Image (cartoon, rainbow, N blue to C red; front, side, top):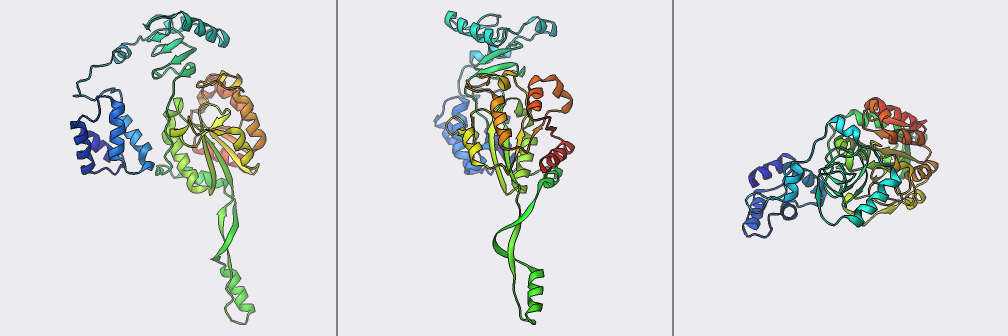
Length: 390
């Protein structure tokens, strides 16, 4: 298993060596970790990865290789009961799904409070209690058209309007080599060059003219280098349904970092609220106040949101609507404040444009941005750059 894992890391361009693999094997033989996959992840990362900048790449490769595995084979660990239950989760027909009714925002949380006070034991299946693999609006690994996911991973329905767990997202890799160079070409429509800073570049025309005026004696002229003077604020939606679009977002992120000298990026989840962050590994401890961002960067910045805008409409329109925490003010309020500060703004959506009309939250955000939402295609990217340049 370890040899295959080692080769998998090598195939993902991680600079791991045979000596490091042997040290990891010795650690396992010495029983320095239990059969827990979390423990193995920590010791493998500590022994195999020599540069913190490669942590995200290691996380991705680790997740690909151990997907669906919760314990190391051969470590004499019993298969967890939760794993067996999730494997047998209930699959509903379309007719059964249509019979389930949404409760509405207030009733949903009032009923959850009542369930928490009444429930005394764990439940699996069923339609009432907080549990797993059922049709209750509370719990995980089942289905309900509008509910609260409590613990566990999403099974792909993406109908939860709030998630009660601490989720970890990874940073986008800005060193990714682009497969499609045209993204860079599209971003160049936004460039505006200016000469700023120290005079370090030879001004050939000025030198020739000055030398001619000086009777042939060399009159050397220097000038500042030309740089792209455009300033960009890039806000990237991360986690949840955006996991389906990581590659294209990394390509944009990598292209933007190379094209714009004045680029600041921030992460958010689903909708912008009172806090954003720069590093997903520290997002719970090192959030930046959105007010501070608004007061730090001037109105000459261009504002670019990247996200699929696919969420519960409550996340945009209601206080407390955030899927992860209780927000005192609605996401709509924060978006309006940002648009008032940076009037040149667009939203890039990696979701295919033909699906936009079926998602209420996309319609809400399009209205807030005065229809300045563009698909993440080469044509959509070019139109977005023209909109920012107008």
